[in-house]
Length: 88
Image (cartoon, rainbow, N blue to C red; front, side):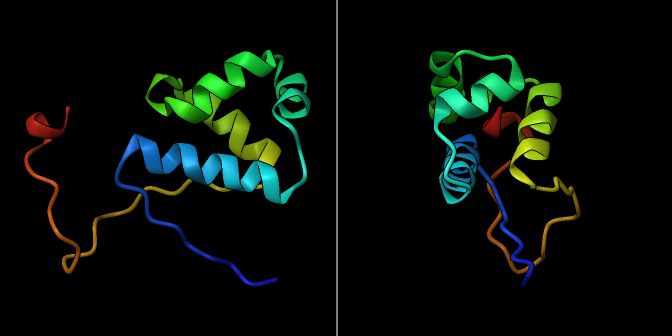
């Protein structure tokens, strides 16, 4: 199985990635939510607005979806998003 690294720069991209990973594992929001102790509605909210995820929730979702979270220095060839204050 090949490893694909996905760079994420926005919360929206994170939500799309989590939803895609869930669907690729043929899990409904209700099924994944049950594994995490969350309602289907809450999991839907987290996929649509992942900026509300806690770090603990993100790591738990990643574990259930077989994903690994990595943080590394940004590639110098990628366009800058602006200053951190402008992003937050």
